Image (tube, rainbow over all chains, first blue to last red; front, side, top):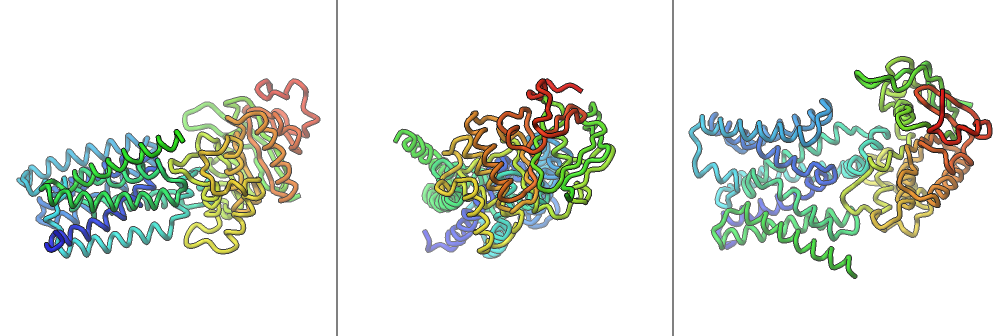
Length: 266
Length: 238
């Protein structure tokens, strides 16, 4: 399998995605914004459609749309005092509706579109890999630098505000990180399933973790394992990688739940 | 005595709402230990939020260590324990991780230095949780969790410690223990403490001053000067 260049590229890109998605998802789960990745993903779909319509690479238009969607969600939540789920719903449905209209106008309702929606191991190019590595590294560096401040906001947002931490900026950073993750992950997992890779490893890890540090480390391990195992299943079973990866992550969640139950009975 | 918090003719109402506070005059000196109580909806939490600069008065002025509270620049000196319903993290954070998050007020970015680690350890030690520092918060009692969050507030080495309804959901023994802990911290650190509660309970015995709020300040004085009728603040009348 690794004799084939497209698989090597898919695995390399998948490893970055498997690392970055749970790290970013960790903060979304703590803020009870697990579905933000879904909302941003649907806006990214509109971005893909805009790319087709404009004749520009859909990767970049999707990334731009994802960042715009993240900014709008955070703005609605923080400054317009819209409840988090309502802000998400507004962006979520506007994104998918805009995407459908644009994709129809571009005449691009075809099989190629599915590679963006559900991922494809055939489509990762060397240029894509470079973009994924660069943006993924930038996302991880941003988390490393602001880790304590991000955790402080996750643990107690009001306390962080009183203590003078730049809470709106830090919330914006988390939304921006979510948008970047959607942008770099859509080739591997697909726009419609990326949110699952941000959230499932984290909620699985939290069932068996004993500290924040262990929860984050286990999230990354489960994310990586899900991507690598999912890609392997996708190759041998000729299945869409996004579905295989997410179902593997679901499997990890079930195992973690059983372990948690077993531990509770000891 | 230098003034830590100062309210001058403060009115406050939420947008399109009934007035919550009217003509509040209050001066709290540095190093004072003050309990602020009153019935639910009486404005005590709003008063605390105004003092911390989280809300701006509709009229009048609120100053914090001499600066307008909403523009207060040295926020690292403020330690805050929010109402327990507002606290929460999904992951199993340990006591030490929670307390370390409090140090973010002093060092939000980059690696912790030796003095930060020392301040974190000292805060955990002060609240008596040194032996439980590596234990997840979810495996501690309500009273122990409350101590962990007080340590989090102490980790930034505050000059003002504000506690909003810290006894909600904890038993009487834990309330007594909290009162003793705050009395000891006040004595050891000389920190200004604002303690907001809908009841005085055990805290009445350790504070220097009681303030009863019911839209206005209806009592402000030493605990032994409080009329017997008002020991239950829900019965405070203007």
